[in-house]
Length: 287
Image (cartoon, rainbow, N blue to C red):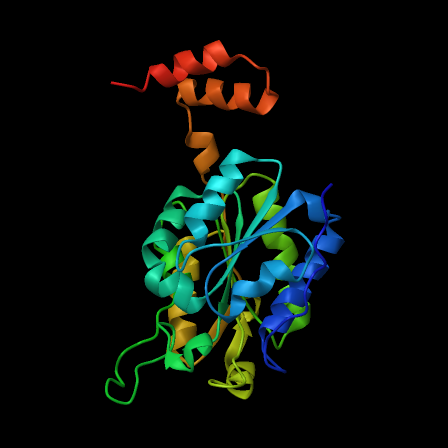
């Protein structure tokens, strides 16, 4: 007999931007009629690392900085699942930066939600990579995931929202899920999600965020235009939001053309009981 766990209550501070992220995710799953039993949420370490406990889906809490390789493996093992990786800016852009870059390069069909608050809230407020330089290094620029994503040829969906703009965030979450579920690759959705305890940036980010659609002749299908526009907006003190880029590129799963692997995965998925055939395939990899 199995027992289905009861979704938990968020443990975040009152006013935390992560409530808005969770609300948008719940909205999008409902709007797209995606059932809990068809959804897998994986989380990293940090305040955002409890997201998978709250929505009643399948969930897994990964090691620090390792949410993307784990989510990639999950998506490849069961393409029928809607796979959502969720983590913070420290988890994704510091210890997990190497995996982040290669996930953009490989373009697996999953959603990656990064809750960016510019601080390590779980460990009492140290600056994260996205925060502009500390007092002893004021010239240091904060890490910008959208700019990095635009520089990688195989990235296919880059978007940024703000917890203080739920209407836009709901729309972006739906579009990110649609992109990944249609097999078009990795949908990166960064959410400016203020930490009210250690880095309360609600007023600041509310004044600075601007949807790229408000920019003249913005084309979200053109990386060069997007890159130039984002640089110009940053130089004028604005934070670009909305769909920064959406395009087409071969996905990781479509690039897996090894016939041995394809045959093995079909046998496993069909549960055909062809142990002899599986053993023969495996033996082909042994020295």
